Image 1 (tube, rainbow, N blue to C red):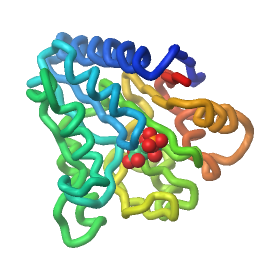
Image 2: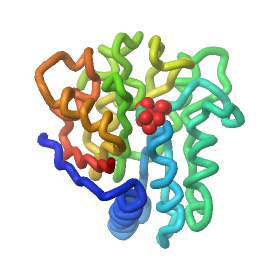
Image 3: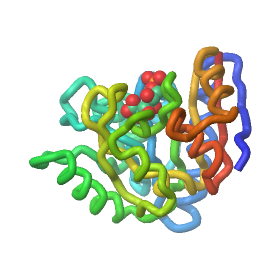
Image 4: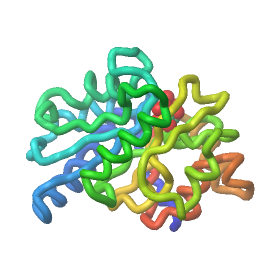
Length: 232
Ligand SMILES: O=C(O)[C@H](O)[C@@H](O)[C@H](O)[C@H](O)COP(=O)(O)O
């Protein structure tokens, strides 16, 4: 499915517009079935968008927020995506939302992935909204080049759920939704900012293996249209 580029003058305008569109998608889901789900990414890019979305007026008590991926650290660790979301999205009106963490206090990251898969299976699929980021190496979610479970993560036959990932560029051990869990979100967004990330996207849209730039799996094989939100 081709990607559609939505370019904005700056990050503030992008955050406002993306928050409006995500809020509209969530409100439509609530109208249609009484609940809504959104999976968001961590990193530095989404902070301003989270803060904007937190102010939007919708029935947040009917929304479940979860993470596209998580570092295998507890929520009080500064590297935690849960902490990032708690401090920036689950505030203001969005404070009433339900949050489903991926991190689980378990004996191993594999045990945590199983627990997280079981927990996240309860919210249904596909996601109403999934917001992906992208690293400078072309990773998205925790689909890192050279990742320990990259082949399985990108395999469309791998069942929906959470799997583990270990990679040089990942820092901590990771917990990540699989490609199959994310690729059919009703609103599938790739949120990137800066000229260098735009150059990375251009390279990813060219020829080359998915394993070299895993974002290619989403750009080339996602069932849903990929909506790219970019600002300089
Ligand atoms: O846990 C994470 O870090 C994210 O889920 C990851 O996939 C992120 O989206 C990219 O690494 C981009 O991160 P930046 O926004 O910081 O460039």
